[in-house]
Length: 209
Image: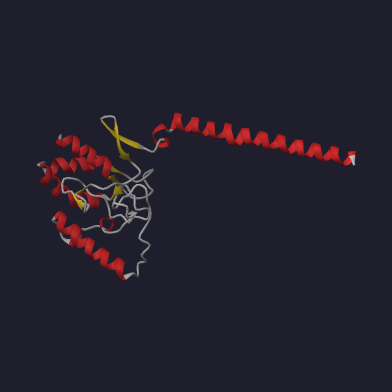
């Protein structure tokens, strides 16, 4: 009996030592190392890509938000508008609810989706005073996350005249803002050019005082 207990005890002790070592290395040292590298080399990204105005956090460059007026979330003509959002938890926060993310899950064959796209195209065209033929796809189609912070340069462009008029600015002034906040393809080849709506509206707010 004693001869069989000793090997078992050694095995248990070896397993406990391995568990302790792996816990320290993988549960403490590795997370601390990753945290340290992230805070040193990628401080802004590691902390949520926060966007600040006068020292106050107003959002994240990675998360879209509403620029609406009133409880009905009607778009505010003074600001550039994001693409539609299905991220609504029905808790009063409306579209672009930061506590909720998701798509409508409507298929391209869905009559409901077709009707929504037609309705949105008419609304966007009327709101911006442009023909429906000029309304780009991202102006009427929500993203998969529902929290996309970017729009296409084409969508930003059709909003220039409306934003300029609502803020008492020239279209040239607003067009320069859009150009300055248009990001090209990643590495020059990946994706499409985008405009971050939050950062663009912050610049607009500074311009209008």
